[in-house]
Image (cartoon, rainbow, N blue to C red; front, side):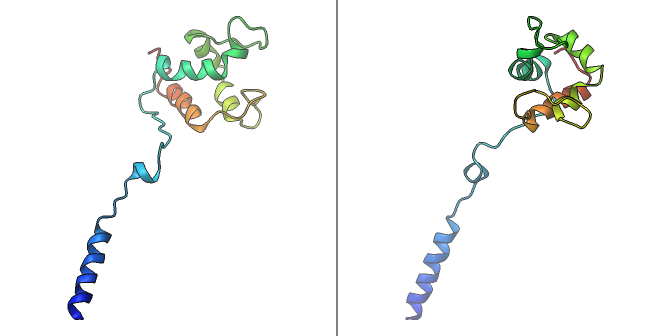
Length: 121
């Protein structure tokens, strides 16, 4: 009887040790938000194309502010309204208008690019 109990205990312990957890299996598709080396061409411009240029593009009459292109964007940012608007802070007109707030990752990428010197890369 003792041998059976010991054998059963060994079997249970060996099966328990075979349990495998990985972060990829537990949390599939985590949102990756790289804000370390942000590129205007690869990161910033695609966000602006999807979220901003519909109203703020050069060929649009919806908004007074046009910033389709690097220099126009930098000039607009220097006016001090860009981050407050996309973060929807008090005292700023919430952007994009008529749409949900931009995802935190996209806001983080834009803010990181601004803080990293607004490089045209």
